[in-house]
Length: 275
View 1: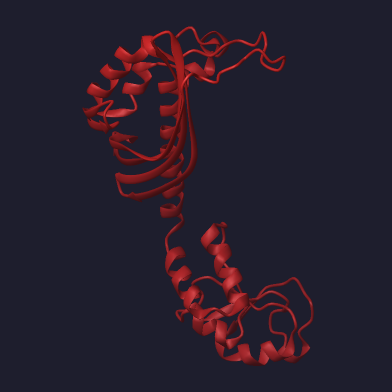
View 2 (view 1 turned 90 degrees about the vertical axis):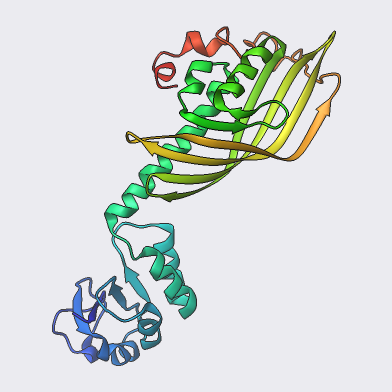
């Protein structure tokens, strides 16, 4: 049916007698101009009720659309209809013109990818090489610049060799952007990473602001890294280290370590199983 649902209407009620009622009614789009002139409230069109573009129905006087489950794109369509922006409306309509199953799958995929990049942080910061290896496919590659470039196993061997010189590490994920195409995906992951390393008779702090350029593949229903490359946007080095835990706020608190001596390994039971 080429029509729309009208929020403040009674079924069969003439446009001139429409009041503020909660019932929904269906009407042909040809009566929209008359209805628009007769009521002050919004005219609500059910998504896909019309074969016409949103820009066209917006020009007729429709001010809102109903899609069902909300999404950011759908909310943008509502706002665009109210502003009367036909070009943005048509672009957003194209974006939300997908089945609910496809939207749900995209949400699940992005959720799993977010868990993947956060699990990387915990595994590398805690020195859990086994957990870290499980996040990569067997044929994955990892480019950490001069530290390691090649297979993921080369990267992990470098981490094991560096462990005696690592006092602490913390990887923080900030902005993330994913693009999913079936069983393949890409991600640009912004991060801030802090490192305190042993340098002879003293320690050095290195803080890096950068991004991970990732490629992922879903195999056997599980997303894992297939390629990860680090981009450095900025970095600072404090030599010697500025670490100071003598303040009362930090005094006598447990110290974190990048290995199995970290307090979290004794504290958690459920979380460690999922790491």
